[in-house]
Length: 248
Image (cartoon, rainbow, N blue to C red; front, side, top):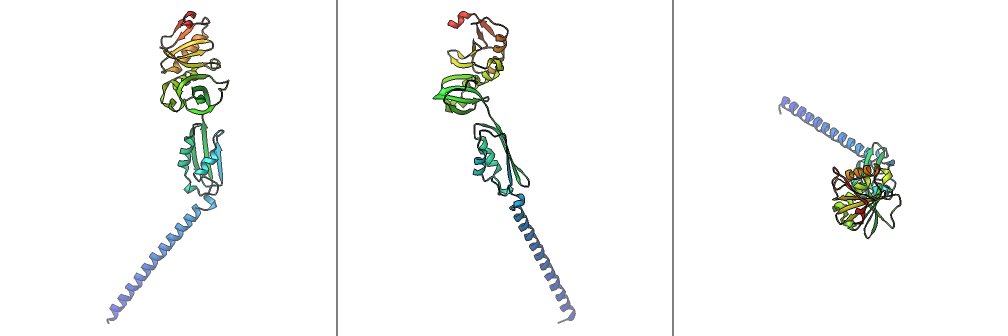
């Protein structure tokens, strides 16, 4: 065999071997880096070491987090924070919820809870109701410090689709604080009506009820004759009927 041809073949073989060795080294380096990253992401350095919960008083946040694997010792990367948030928001007491990774070892949970604004008598009993008309929980008797919506013909499971409860809650929530004690909304023959600080108020259809509450309160504060009937069916044109109207 020609000496020059043999030398060329030898150099080609050596170059190929060096190339293959280089690829093997790069592959091994890549695998080592990947293994190191995987180990690091599952190591105590980036695993849950602390869970901070803010704003939760009535909600069992720990149980919800546990159902979604958000527990101490778990790698932050694999936490189901979205599922935990969704479960928290399914609780009627929870208005807003955030579950966030705070790298490298902390989870921060922020909760904004609803508060009872009204006691509502619905079919089957009394409920605590939030200001956005969300039913919070049934109670045996209404708290004395809350205004009331007396709607015994309204089924609790259908209340979210009805306007009467939302209108009643909005009206009661729209009253100034000094008019809320003892205030009550009920469903009359001509729509919603209320008793506010001893005055009967005709509300009518359950629309613009917050505005109607403000108008009714202003009329009461202006010094109306006791026993008069306030009509705010059209809040832009309120009226006061004489005391005899209470007998109708």
